[in-house]
Amino acid sequence: MSTLRRLNIRLSTMRLVNVQEASGTRSAESSNCTRPTMDVVVLAGGFGTRLRPWTNSIPKPLLPILDKSMIEHVLNVLPESEVDKVLIAAGYGVDQMRDYFSNINLPYEVVIVEETEPLGTGGAIANCRPYLSNGTFCVINGDLITSLKVKDMLEFHKKNGGLATISLWPVKDPSRFGVADYIEENGKIMRFQEKPPIEEAFSNLINAGTYLLEPEIFDYMPEGRHSMERDVYEKIAENGVLNGFPFEGMFVDAGTPESFVEATQACIGSGRYSKGESMGNSWFGENVVTSGTIVSSSVGENSRIGNGSTVENSVILNEVVIGENCSIRNCLIGKNSMIHDGSSLDGIILDHGATVE
Image (cartoon, rainbow, N blue to C red):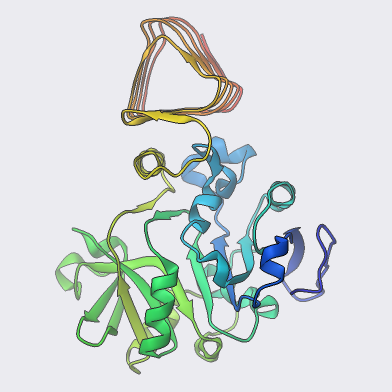
């Protein structure tokens, strides 16, 4: 177990690193068992620009999806019994994340590793290196809501050998992603290309944002800002040490307004909540009062929706008041906001605490 104690501050003099422990609690049961051996890096360095204005005051990893934060849903794929430490590579909102994780109980230690400048995916991982144990570690993009089982992926990784295993997901248009030339017979990725023209793509299997890596991967990583996809995976694929792990179920990158709604709907459909209740294809937090029609949406706790109002394909956060005869479609409605009678909103992000007359 780490020598850090809960809520103590560990300051680093290393370049670009400032570490604050956010939560180091473990249950008595887990501390009496064999020590877990895998560390996890969550890549959460982005500024969430596509979800502004919400992310002006709340870091994207802490945005609520139903009754949990986005990052808790991201961590849902981990085998808790295998995880020793979670490092969150964060670019902003570090103090808020520290406070958040100090108030929830998790079965592993959580450490916030701050990026004082953009480092790229590879640079962010390298920035966490001083805090990683000397063993296989996992890396997850911080806005992915998936059905991946990292435990199954880890078993495959250890069986198949190599330096890295990438989760893979099929898409119709792979041109916006990293694409794998995957050989099903041996589980290897023979070639890897980042965002190719669709006519040049090796396949429709894309990098699905979760990796299992061996410490030797650092030998292939350049210093400073760099991309794992462009600077590392393309290189090691040629050496036959890059594996692929296709999976089925769901895969949503929750980084845009549309995909945030999609991720919320996926969590409703898969029952990923511990409070509130679902009715049909919608979810309602505790103490919600509604006389309206709610379709394919989530409504946060203590919210009120008036008679004759319709909410469709939207996310309503906590403490929202929507008046009578309103139409809310394809929207993200921030917490503590108020929408007056007869309002019609479509395709907008309403900031926290805003009022619509």
